[in-house]
Amino acid sequence: MRVLVTGGAGFIGSHTCLSLIKKGYQIVVLDSYANSHKESLKRVNKILNLKNSEKIKLFKADIRNEEMLEKLFADSKKENNPILAVMHFAGLKSVSESIQNPMIYWDVNFNGSLKLFKIMDKFDCRTVVFSSSATIYSLSSSTNLKEDSNIGPNNPYGETKLAVEKLLQKMFAKQKNLWRIANLRYFNPIGAHKSGLIGESPLGLPNNIFPLITQVALGMIDKFFIFGNDWPTLDGTGVRDYIHVMDLAEGHISALEYLLKNEPQILNINLGTGKGTSVMELINIFQDINKIKIPYEIKGRRVGDLPSVIADNSLAIKCLKWFPKRTIQEMCADGWKWQKLNPNGFKN
Ligand code: NAD
Ligand code: UFG
Image (cartoon, rainbow, N blue to C red; front, side, top):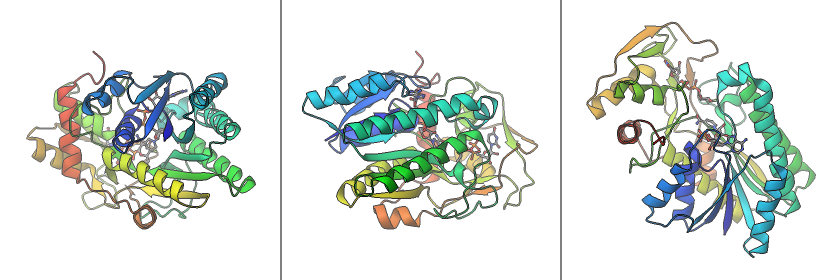
């Protein structure tokens, strides 16, 4: 069965491509490489001992390019191998950038999705797994977040994700017996495939904790700044629900298979571990498991941060029969292996 993976060259997309191929799916990747490198998919092939283009068909295109989207679906149909489902990762993901430039976020994340869904409908492809985010939950609720907890993003990035979820709800309501939709709300994906061949390769200076820690470990950045040690948490530093990117990738396969086996429906599902780790704990675990020092300094709180953001993942466990298997120690070891072997990510 053929699946379209938009944004498949990116961090989560490339790990999911690997899991999809392992499960026997044929994939078509659409990516503009706005925040990724073609090399990531070559590495996926390397891990699987495949020749390039054997299992992954690549389309370099922008998600907002309706003509290309149409061509991609039409080509697959002509080949008698139509696209039957879509995993939609393509999009922009920086909260701070979205505050500075909301229009580009609305254009890529919302308009891009709208165009994709329109073409899917035209080609009778109505199964979609969408990359949503825990950032759509409201600031007031932050621990053991359930899918029906208060919604209310506080930044344009989160607003675009919520708008796409709402659009999917409307599409489902209009054609109830047709669409199969999963909105997967990710918590904090970190780590890398254990081969060290693929991982997160941010363009420019990272904002997120994990790539910052690994770059400090490499000596590319002098020290790590902890944003506040006066939060109402056990050690005063911020607590997050970190999830290994391979567990997240496998969650996508479970969601797709659930949708394909069941009646048309729309699902909102948290993908997290349900466990919180503080910034201080993460630094200590990283240092212990990798035997490397992370110089750090305490700074003031970052605007817009929350003390604690943790998933209630019971719906994913019950409904998808998926559960995260990898520990925070494995996240730190695998993520460091990737960064150590590829200090410049996929560049060079
Ligand atoms: P990423 O930037 O590594 O991957 C996104 C991919 O989309 C990249 O390959 C990029 O080149 C591509 N892309 C961007 N704009 C495009 C466009 N206009 N047309 C075609 N392709 C385009 O990010 P990621 O961490 O792998 O995230 C994947 C998805 O998951 C995103 O939608 C993101 O918003 C969402 N998400 C990520 C996180 C996280 O912490 N990483 C958390 C919640 C949700
Ligand atoms: N942190 C630091 N110093 C840094 C960077 C981060 O102490 O230099 C702390 C933050 O204060 C927070 C934790 O590390 O306590 C995690 O911060 P990240 O920036 O890595 O992640 P966030 O939880 O703030 O946000 C991430 C994604 C968002 C997504 C959200 C979903 O960046 O896109 O998770 O919960 F929406």
